[in-house]
Image (tube, rainbow, N blue to C red; front, side, top):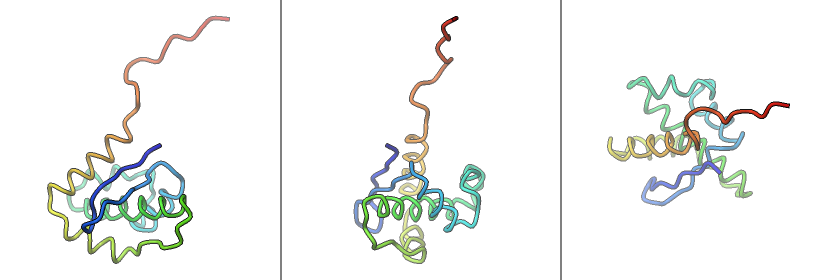
Length: 114
């Protein structure tokens, strides 16, 4: 399960970043291909858009999965992200990177010969 908990707008929220709903909402928020999100993350002038997409996509994905009909608006997310300080934004990005790291690193195990 790929979830992040983070305090946003003074409230601890869950961002679900491991479901297809996340890709849909992330794409809506950023008007970009969710598969190319690393491009937004790597450009300093696009990090605001990346974080908005992360929060909007993660919160709304979580709400969809748990059946909560009260989705958050992009405008509200932009207000929250705009009020974040750089440390808080960096912490959220680091949480996202950490939850998306492969569980095991290194070579794949040897395959058995038939």
